[in-house]
Structure formats: structure tokens, C-alpha cells
Length: 537
Image (cartoon, rainbow, N blue to C red; front, side):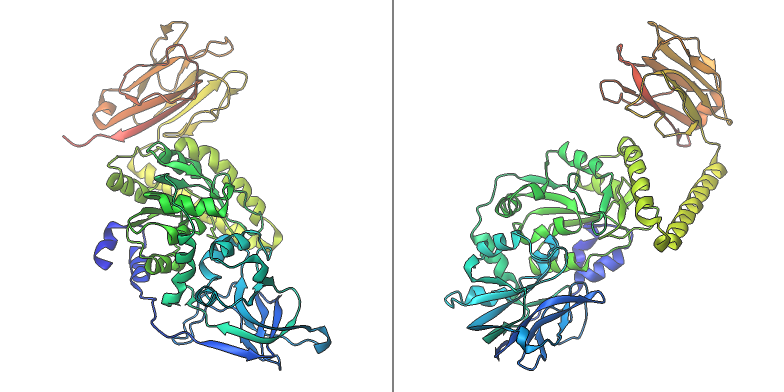
């Protein structure tokens, strides 16, 4: 795998990704199966961020629950939702079940964790399907029991009548305890694959060939879910190139698996959505978009190894400039240098520097608003203040760097029934696309003169020199065209590019250096201007 990784990783921390992807997690160890006579199963109870309960012997000595610590290497994953110790109760509280049962494991009520981590004892139930024993499960985080637990078990051939979700202490005649087949994301045995292979055998692949799995319509819980902003740009980008946007949560479990099994190409942000690679065809191309530039998903690296996912790409699309937590945080996505390089290699296209500007402007307001609501409490005050200081330092540094190179071109527009907008710097959008038509514009560039004219009343205005106004105010005369150019010296150094947004919802093509843009009678509600350095002769 190592030789090919340079063609798969479009990330800043490629060395860390390569190290994680090249780590071998497969173990050929023989899994143990214990039988606990007069065994007890205690419901999981949360204590200090972890859980207690699970299978105990008759003296309440802990036997099994759920752990990410490999018993051989002693390497440990995170402790989220682990059940690694027991507790005692009055024996009078014990319900008696005079049957031999199988311990099915501990179930996490989070879709991605459930699919990846909670089936590691079920190879035994599937391999010995002739044993008509009840299968007992614990439930832990994210709301405990979820109805889709039963959907997956049905596809594994486990009858619902056999399943018991333990909600009270139970003592059984005996408890069969298969060893975990995986200690995520540290190691896995060959038995780990059995539940997935069984499910695939019960599902017919769909014929949708190119999928973009989107979160744009997914409603995350304010307290525990990750909130991503500006994903609509990526969804629309892939859709424009023949992908079908799918919101998986709107489909049944069977339908979701069917869609994944039939696809030739899939793209999604890293997390639960990329865990679906477990059900892909061996040659499916999977574009995995990383939400935070510092995070390496060990879980996804394990999936790629265990399920022989070869045709994958990892692409950083983070535009976070404040504190970001990949699982429960507030995430800003966007078009960056890694994404542009990926698009050039994968699609053979060159992306304009500001191709997501229209999306980004709208997402930015929502991102900042939610980030502040989430973190501005007294409890998070230090984080809140430090993140805003960090953001301000970055802005100052960027402005300082820009000023050293040259002065910034700025402009403002006059909008019907609103008046003059604030001055903005080059490459920004001059007006909200939901607001009224533009009637006038002013441009300022201290390094050189800018000459510009606007079209209204079926004629071009007289060409004005920056920073004077072109157009009218208070006369209800919307602009339907624009052109601009730099003075002779400026034109030797820069191209001035500009485009307009029309009331029909479309952007014009970029024009430059005095070329006229006509909107063919459509009123304009936004202008965008930028300068590009000319290459030396």
C-alpha cells in the first residue's frame, strides 16, 4: 500500500496518515469462547464517562463487556462507551433465567460506532446458527436502544425473538461469551468480517453508480452531534459531475446497504458515512473528505485494511479557523489547496480560487452564529476567548502579508431600498444574493486608477475614475451591465476580473480588462471583483 499512498492523500499531515494506513491490524490469533456457569449480566450504568456492567460470575467478578484494549498487545483505543468493570447488587434484585444464553456484546446507539464496533461477538451466533439460544445485549451511549439494531440483526439471520436487550440484572443457567473479534481501532481477527459478509449475502445491490452521501439535511443534536457548514458546495460540485446526492438517514437499512453495494464511485465526509466502505465492492472508488485538517481517522484506516478498500482518496476540506472537534464540534468546510489539487488530478479540472465564495459567505454567518451559541457559556469562556484571539491574529497576519505585496482593491455598492453597503475587499461578494438590485458602485485602489462604467436605461454611463460613483441613487434605475479597466501602469502588472450575479440566480462568466458584461435586461444583485498578477514577460 505504501507505494500508492502519495496518489491517494491530499492532506497536510500525509506522513501521519501514511503511518496509520500502513499499520497492520490483522491478527491470526484463535479466539476464545468461555462458558460462565450461573453467570450474571448487569445492565450498563454510566460512571465518570465510562460504563460498568456486563457479564460477571456468580460472585460479581467481571468477565466481559466492551473494550478497545487488545489483550495481547495491550494497546488501547479511546474509552468512549467502554464497559470494562462490574458492580454489585443485592441478590434479591436478580431476575432468574433458567436457560443457556449467548452474550452478544454491548451496543452503542450511534450508527457509525454500532456498525463498526458492536458486532464483534456475533460471528459465534452466525457460525452456530443451529443453537436456538437467546442472545443478550447491553446498551450504552446515544440514547441506548435504536430500532435499526433489529434491522441489522435481521439481515444477519438472527431472529428478533432471540434478542434480549438487558434492562435489569439477570442470572442465567450459563452464559456463552465469545471473545471480541476486534479491538477497534487496534486489531481485528478474520471472524470480524463474518457479520458483514452475511449481511451482504442477504441484500441485492442497487444500480445507482455514483453517490455523494450528504449530511446537508441531517439534523444533528445540538449537544452531541457535529455541525458542518458549507457542505452544500461539495454536494453541488459532485452532483454537477454526475453523482447522485443521497441522504442515507432517509432510507431503510436494507436500502442504504443496497445503494452502497451497487455504487462504482462514492464521496462523503469522513465519519459514519465513510464507514459504509465496509459494504462496497472491491473496486469502488471512495473519496473521503476530511473535516478537520489535524485529525487522522484510525477507525477509517482499520476499515480500509479489514475490508480491502484500495481505491480510496483522503482529501482535507477543512476551513476551520476556530476550535473544531470532529465528533461534537462546529466545523467549517471549504475549497482549499488540497481540494483544488485533488480536483485537478481526479476530474482533470482547474478550480477558480473563489469557486465556493457564494456558498461560503452564506455558511460563514451560520457557522459563527452556532459556534458562539455552543461555546460562549461561562464553562467554555477560555476556549471562546482563545479561539477568537486566534482568529483575529490570523486576520491581522493575512492583511499584513497582503499589504506588504500591494494595496488591496476595495469596492461598495448601492442597493435599492437599502442604501450603500460597507466597503469590502477584492474577491468578496458585494451584496446578499437575496437582497435588492444594485444601482451604483464605487471602486478604490490606491496603487492605480480604475476606470469603470455601468449600463442602465439602455445606455452606458460616462466612465468614471476611482473612487467616484458610477450609476445613480434614489432614481430606481437598476444596473444591468458593467465594465472596468486599470490605468496603463496598473494594466502592466495586473488583470482586473469581474463578474455579476443576476436575478435569475446565475453568475455571469468572468470578464476582464474593460470587457463589457451585459445581463440582457436582468437586474443585478451582486458584483465580485479581483486582481490577478500578470506573469513577467
